[in-house]
Length: 197
Image 1 (cartoon, rainbow, N blue to C red):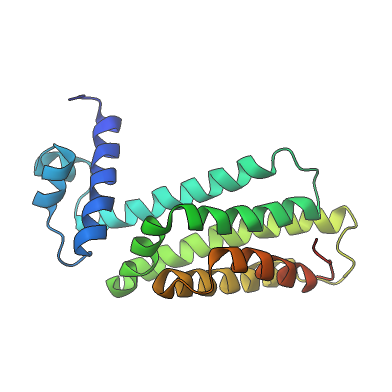
Image 2: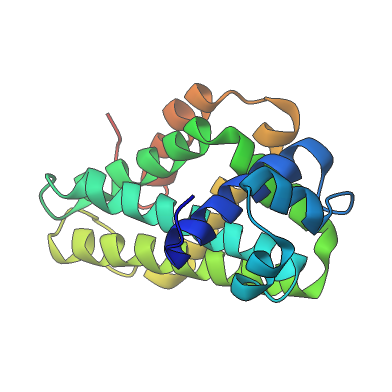
């Protein structure tokens, strides 16, 4: 086994995701994560002070993945509404590809109380800022016809819609991800006066 701390940390995170998925947050023991990751409890505590911090680190890891996938997908697009549309589709498609982590991190975390609420707000703010960034560029490019659009308000409203539908989808499987992408993205674009494809 590698003694590289970053490799060990990633192994612990991967194992934690599997154990949380199978047992749920409250029934998961750090000993089980140590066994699954082929590390020790001491190794876990070296990287994470407690189970809650480990869980919240998974939220950060998933958020980083989501942002990375989104920014990579829009690199080839010209600035403007095309980037906004690709960003929305990529976020929704990434949730679809990683349904298990999304379910664990969005659904199980609901019962964690204040620490998770703070983390949830951080994540929502992070993605609302990213949406706002691309909306600003679309306004500057003259592609959003509404001159008085409140970009910050719109980006938070969009995040609320995305978050609610993704939560419903991970709970129930409905509406399916394809419908969310094909119906929600044009609806959001119409809300700023742009007709989607």
